[in-house]
Image (cartoon, rainbow, N blue to C red; front, top):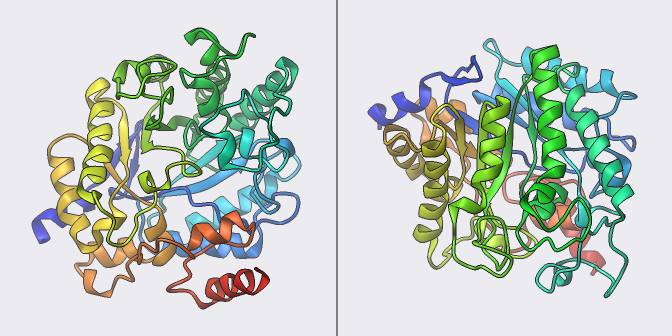
Length: 402
């Protein structure tokens, strides 16, 4: 175990800066901001605890780029108006550790999953996953222009807010991902051809490159490398089902050309196929699913070895994550090991693992239902319902209301 731990304890390079170790939180929305999207005291304390918990990278959850892009009433939202509140969050994260973590801010527009849905096009697969009016209006070109401009401007605020890096979110079915996938059949400048389907992400990448040049911001993207449904990202075409890496390579090429420093691997759309991203106790085919995650990270790393690749699919392994993570690092398939729901379950996971005290880690129970995601979908503050009594109480409120 000590030999494997040594690989996780080593620093990792991200765009010329160092993360103190190779353990990262993954962006986990908790719906606990102030009404205007500013971090609340609860938000700040959550991230202070993660920093004190020894993580090399603290990956701040999806920050909405505008009011129209918010998916929950208390989703964090970064703007010029509340910039100082995010500086306070960044300062609190750094102050909580003698060796501060590398801080990533994830920037997102909710698209079809926003409180006021901005649906790019209708999908027989995805429309039923949300309260989508049948045959309802789709976003106009002007609305997508506005969303692209707002999201790009928010990317440019990240350095001023105190982040080391910005994540241009392109995963889990939100707006950037929806527009990129091959099944995007819009007939305007945001659909059809690859060039059009990447137009939204191109705006964000340009903003990231501008902020890198002007403010020293590092940037990258969390990408659903494979969405695992016909016409999804990573498929061979509008109706394709088999994984085809050429379906995602053009986005990676653009990121590489613009100087992006990292890619965070993920898969699927949680609203449609949550088993790809949410570990479940006793889940059939778990090893196959984990191998897919780790294989996708390896694909990205082989595409551009200069990318710092942040991998997913480790929480389900519990204490076995250390050996698997180290072996994947040794194989050159991944650089940094990401934990999502595990960072909810135990903010101190990193310091416990690196001190050789895995027996004291409060492991994610991999709840199949009535879990942290249940809280989020109910638009309640989200956290671990197993290890934190406050979130258990929130779950009971929801259950009583049914």
